[in-house]
Image (cartoon, rainbow, N blue to C red; front, side):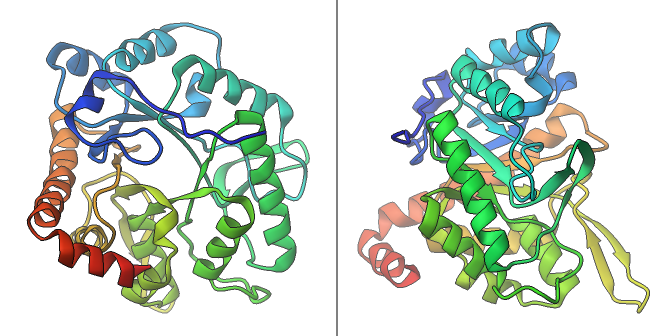
Amino acid sequence: MTQQHLTSDGPSAQNADAGPHGLPCRAGAGLKPEHVADILQDSPDIGFFEVHAENYMGDGGMPHRQLAAIRERYPISLHGVGLSIGAEGPLDRGHLSRLKALVQRYQPGQFSEHLAWSTHDTTYFNDLLPLPYTGETLTRVCDHIDQVQDVLGLRMLLENPSTYVAFAQSTYAETDFLKEIVRRTDCGLLLDVNNVHVSCVNQQWDAKTYLESFPVKAVGEVHLGGHAVDEDDAGRPLLIDAHDREVDAAVWALYEALIGRIGPVPTLIEWDNDVPAWPVLMNEAMAANAILEAERKARSDQPDAVAREARLAG
């Protein structure tokens, strides 16, 4: 089946250039039920909203009424958390069918999932679990991505994980593993900058080096979120991808450098736990949007220099 790039025709698509997959190259926010009334009343100037697909797999009810009202005004992005792309067993065909129905119903600008596994046989785990980066895992993940893209008829995005341990049997660096997935499947990537920071602190990697080796040409969306700070048994910092607070200053710095390198891309603020009042989340989105707008202006002022940097970035 030919993969298509879905487009969004919501009202806010007019206020920025659309990205390669239909979302405007602006900042968006995760949609929370407690914020819907404020959003519909005030119609904030925001790029898009993202929802977890699994929250909308029922046939009707309040969740669908709210999402339909939002979709009338804004582009949306679907973010999956339950496909278990990395699982050893086959993908759940029922889950894929429900996901396809959602795509057809709401015509999202983008669909994304995680490089992780969360099922074993008939058991479902409420977590996104890491994978060893081996040839066997690579083949399995690529087969599953091909299946998803074939069923949905679109190019999906795969998100880099937040990790806390490394597998001794891994034979690929994470960025090389992602590059090979993109080469084999032609999927895109969702670059979660908070995940980069969390993984690099926990694994004692260098975040700038990681991002320099990341296949940025495949990036169709960026995620930003907050993390909790703890320490391991040896007293070293241990970061937890908690999505329960503001974006950290170190993550903002990585994000600003990334956007300076690759240009504006759709950017989402994730805040899934201890959800604040809507104005707090909107302020985070506007902080991201300010970085995007500053880079857009810089590129319009110096197009030749930007073109040279883009060629070097590869």
